[in-house]
Amino acid sequence: MTKGRGGGFILGAILGGIAGAAAGLLAAPQSGAKTRKEIERSGKKAVASARRTAKKYERQGRQAAKNVSREGKRVVRKATKTANTAKRKTARQLEKTAKKLRK
Image 1 (spheres, rainbow, N blue to C red):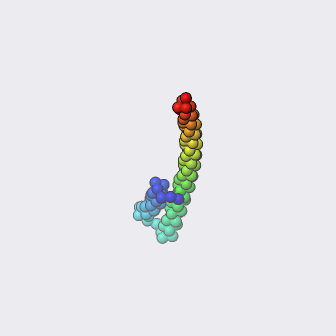
Image 2: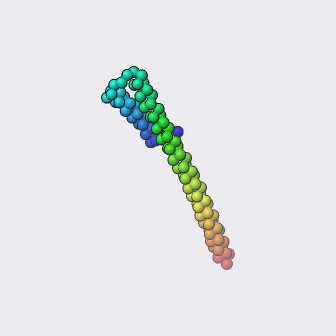
Image 3: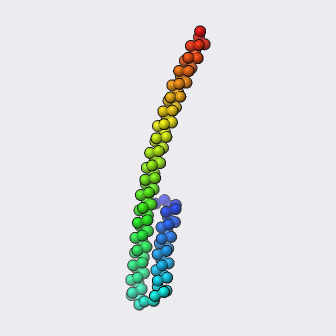
């Protein structure tokens, strides 16, 4: 995945999950085994959330790339058509001018 706005969001989601887990530990002390289970569960939730978010941004990025490519091709076709039209019109005008000069 490319670095950009989505990458910052994912990092924020992971850090938020870690901060939330730490706050939970401080607010409600538990036994060591129970605390470790809670940390593991919170970490797994944060990783799953980050993966879902990464996949979402990856899909959006791929779709945006397809759209840009499609639009670029459309612009090239239109520019080519315009250039060919201008070329034909110029050739006709030059031919008319050449005929007038020959008279």
